[in-house]
Length: 137
Image (cartoon, rainbow, N blue to C red; front, side, top):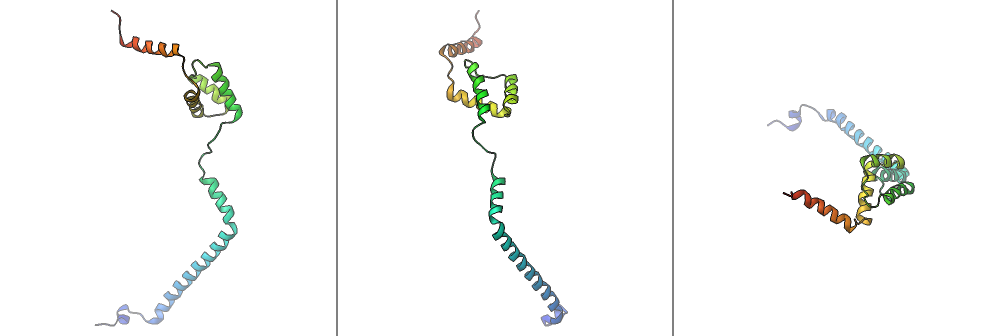
């Protein structure tokens, strides 16, 4: 059998150059870690506030008061049938600065929370539905 040193074909002197490179790299990594630790201690508060700011989802909450008032005015003027047309929604979006999706959601929520069709309207809707199924001969 051939000894391991001879099989490798190199002496201890040749390994020392490689070993020095590894030592220098690990020393450099250690310095990098030290610098990183110093920077993290110094700027951790600032970095965490930036992280929070960028990780937050779109702000949820109340619509601006002026926009709400404009929508409420439209609602009060059309209380009997509070379903704005597409043209109404576009006009409301332009006047309030809101997206059409926000306007749609506001009206959906408003109708669910605050609107009950009158009995006459409910009967009229039922009659129109029934009339479409039956044909008089």
